[in-house]
Image 1 (cartoon, rainbow, N blue to C red):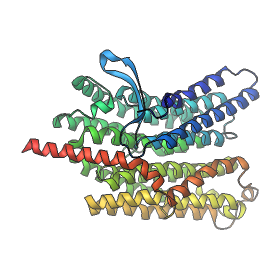
Image 2: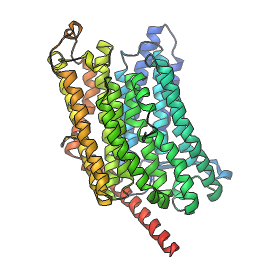
Image 3: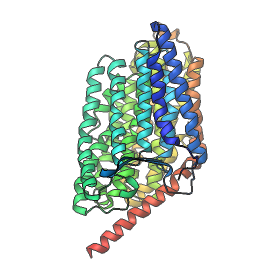
Image 4: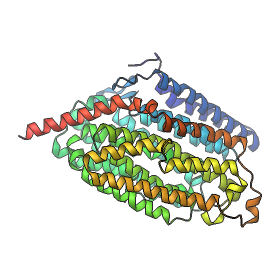
Length: 503
């Protein structure tokens, strides 16, 4: 079903490549090239975002079917085709990707001064891969986009990152690539036994229970690294610390959602019996991640590292919600993913504001910032409160739903998720107090300028989204409801059929 009559998803996916081509064709001295690259990237990403709003307006929230579908023959003799579409699980993540990209380009306006053209090209290519991954409805097409995301992010970290950028970039690349090799083997097995890689068609197939087990762990190896789940999370703090600010925003805001999206799109519907069997394992790993990384966050002296570890904890809550297999848990997981994308991205931008002025991320380097930069302190406080789940702000609704869903499955798992919220309040308030309050002891801090008009423009949409999601969450939850209900029903029906077959 395509409600607009033209290939909207392909346009959203590949239009950034047209912008990248224009940027690469620009000639002139370095200043001219840099200026044209910035403006071309910004306008391209803004046009893509405005086009993507069609998804919000035209999406039928009452339907669990895939919408805005596009199909083209690619390798018909192998059962592989170019198939694009979105449902309630994926549509808002396409919008999140297109919304964060222009904000990242605007945030990089002054921070990136070398190889500006290449940097903007990398970001536009990254946008293509992110949108394509969430919109792909063929397993091979999905895998291409899923892996290709690594290339521009590898370059963004490795070329424009901090002093240990090469180490962090290779660690990020190797961790995420090695896990995906097993997923590729699982995809090939599924294709060999079904003759297709079309995702909606695969939803009608039943994979034998014995095969489900090893396919589950093959998917887990790939998706767990992307989430990232404990104990394969160690690449994330290094990547965040060394990445430029905008790279951290996209990494936390969108790329961390890839693994959780993989669980929702493939693991649960294709492997229902294995998912139910190994749900306790996921709960254990997730609760450990929530508690352990929250405690580690309390010990950090680097602002970026603290927020990076908090992301692992928040994504632990997401994986708990996914494997509850009920409406509350799954809807909460999706809402938390969306809210975390907005709030964590904003927190990294808050760190970037200070880093651009002082060139330090050490918490002890600051103090008393609220008296010097009151507008900044207010913005930072809003996103700090949102991160800890204050009612009325973005994160509360999703995490509350996850706890409710987990309680229905196992109260101890719900307690672990709730403990993460308590520890989250501890480390985020500790961070805010040390940065914003107290006496100004350093002379260079007294000369800091408050938010510039460009920075206001970056933060304004994120503030609006944070308040909107907290005050009126149903406007987002309504996108999930039909698809989540269909997923729960399909999962329960598959388990019921398996029980009858085993009798």
